[in-house]
Image (cartoon, rainbow, N blue to C red):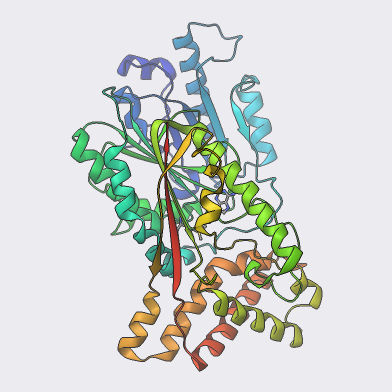
Length: 482
Ligand SMILES: C[S@@+](CC[C@H](N)C(=O)[O-])C[C@H]1O[C@@H](n2cnc3c(N)ncnc32)[C@H](O)[C@@H]1O
């Protein structure tokens, strides 16, 4: 990675011989506001002649948007030069541009600045318009700090993931190998799988072939925390590999997030069970695990629909021979996931919050956590008829028991407060933001903070009284595109 300033297109062309498309990431929000330079991530790709598509990503920071205009304009000029077309036509290059939470002013300014030539094949991604069925994980890196259970779940899939990386066809071309991480959250739990993939790819390809890693999550995700992990975390991947290029894509994975047939390897851990919509409220509970009868059936139908959508979209994005590895929480043979008691504690705390007037009964009623474990049968259902679905086949599907690291420590040190603290913090960082969407003042940061703190505190007290493990299970499915 390196920084470049916004040289005019012609200068850049003189310095580097290349063809479009380039990948350009503007991580404004990640930069010190005083930074006058455009820190253009992946600019090294320009020099190395690796261009798949153009993606401009502005994280909606408060830095001068003029810098982004300039960078986009440079790319458009470049595209025109390479396409050999005049100023009056938009470039033909395969381009997408994505803006995270751009202001209306920014979008207006961009249109003016670029002469309105972004349409039609420059895709304009506006702020999240999907119904707010679930929120992103708690920000400021909170999820990164407390997601030890998903980390254990993801770890159970790593041997299958490594095998998939070692068997995926990569061709001889010098094109970059593309890894997509669907539902990355703040990135900490993605480091291990991505590093394993990079190691396995390097053992096959040597050091020079570029590897692109796209981390995908909803626009509300804390991408700053993700970039911080990629830059500074001791466990970050590819710390010393200059041919690894990371980017973030802020779009729901229930939409197309990457161009067709670009992805060699897809990874998705503890994410594909978050639904695209919540079909119903859940009387007496907030969690799908606490639903019964026709309401449970509605959620099952929604999950089945979402899973097929997810597979269809991922299949289109995969190259032929590409692999997709998905890990989700699952059930044991008795239909238990290990999260039931945990969720019941949450339900009891919410009930006491109503009694204390910390939340209203209506707010409580509107709280729904649509994410729920998926059975092995759910995962393989689309393949049941003839063994394949949208060009994908199942290479492997298995379940594994997942340790609760907080409980393992408790067994050693007997510290009830500590185990309850860690379990409550996991609950808060993962689920509280979604529950807070039901607050009538969900936009009020202080109220949301107060709600989350009270919920966490209640959970801590309850769980310290009678400590118990969250011994859950994870299902891993390995899919190949034929
Ligand atoms: C529990 S976290 C898992 C994060 C990480 N992969 C891990 O293993 O810890 C689930 C993530 O999926 C994301 N997610 C949920 N629905 C999504 C959607 N429709 N599109 C993209 N990401 C989504 C959430 O925002 C969240 O960051």
